[in-house]
Length: 283
Image 1 (cartoon, rainbow, N blue to C red):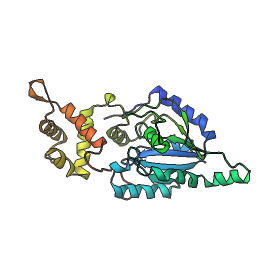
Image 2: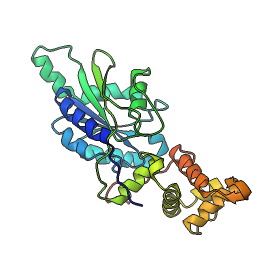
Image 3: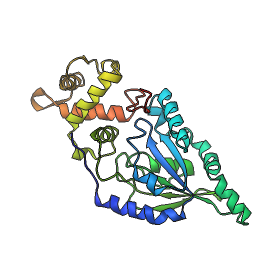
Image 4: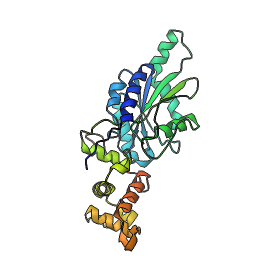
């Protein structure tokens, strides 16, 4: 599969972030805990240089705990503050404001020496589409401040959100980068739903996921769908269609429906806690 997707509104979003970065003390970057490197936009490092940085391993409940810990250590060695969060259920959210203050303690101390005592920390929340930024902001604020959705492209423009006297957040639209140098990155992003499924061949995508699971998590598909994983990926997809009664008129198997069922089960954690990439030199 070949991946390239960069709608015009993302160019606009990137320009908007560049214009606003001078107002910012801290860049809070959400990544998907299942693919922490593939779900990072490399432009963010350039955008956020000389700013305090906080990486949130979001959807940590969908990834294996041992790999969450390994990734947290990986980012800490790069100089980031790190928190494992589950924005939908509120896991890790209570610790965030303390971590924000700690990450910005030098800025707060500089302000204090200048006699500025009540200026809030201003944090820009960034991340690729569908990584959970709006859900995170709403969980942190304790109310619905940002629009949420289960597909990319829900947040269209910027908005400032005042959490309290200490912290203000700038929500931004999710942006991908123009071209994936490594097609494996595009594949992982497609797995987690960061691209619109309408532009993808879902059967090919499901076949690639079946191959990955057969290599790294061989028990998952047999336990969930009662299939024979040693068969080819398209045979397995046919078995899933048959066992889950995915049929069209004339009782013909609907492998496209089976593919969407598999992808949806993966994205929503119904296949268990799965991590799709690992820190360098660890695996």
